[in-house]
Length: 328
Ligand code: SF4
Image (tube, rainbow, N blue to C red; front, top):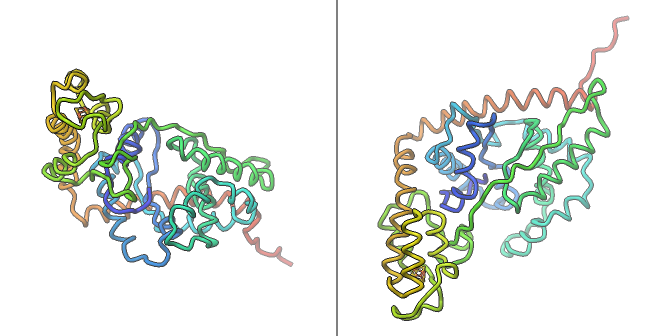
């Protein structure tokens, strides 16, 4: 995950909540991708270090446990600088230019000049992030599948060129599709930091209440007496994700018959959100900054050891290890 600052409910439901389950099923590596932040924020790096700590805190708050998974910072594992360079030598530029997010981000981030070598190459960085751990699976949403597919292509190309004792070195990772429920932000669009429509994992109850008060609803309900439809309302979508079946039934009933008002309905949605946020916030408060730093250092050391195992094989397969000249 990129260090974009404090995480929001969309990040939690789209990734973190699933990762917390995965840590008991697989040997997992989760990292904060501060090198990736440089591909777009190269001109102002002042927030990257503090944002990295915030994201680490949110990882821990969500329930990632450093005893059950490895949590690390990308830039602290030096092999993340080495493998992209080597893989970059064999990755055709055409493969990078056709990655869907390459054009999309250039169009959307209009205030930034993204005609950079680093930005074009970020899928190689991403492929390296995966291949360094010889990963079997990558937990991603639908929109990230293209990156994993490119990673597989790069691994395949590497394995065609180089082998170690006749064996392939980089296994092709598979996609582990993450269920990510539709989570609207307060303006009804997808919850996203760039839209400014988020509910943060750190928002206290009164802030959540305030944010939901102004949330858009079914446009058909202009007056209290108008009937509405939760299936056409972003607040209804929140209820579907967070509320109990009983509350959801009351919402459908009350909205469609105009028996409840939107204020009341939003109050129930807030109650459900607060139930989810409270344990996350309590866990966050239990970690000191020094503890988080230590967890990241330990995790980065563990990740370095695993990544170096792969790099020994990669360097040997590419014959990048100098051998001593034979004795006369
Ligand atoms: S009652 Fe609830 S679901 Fe219906 S329009 Fe209002 S906020 Fe949306």
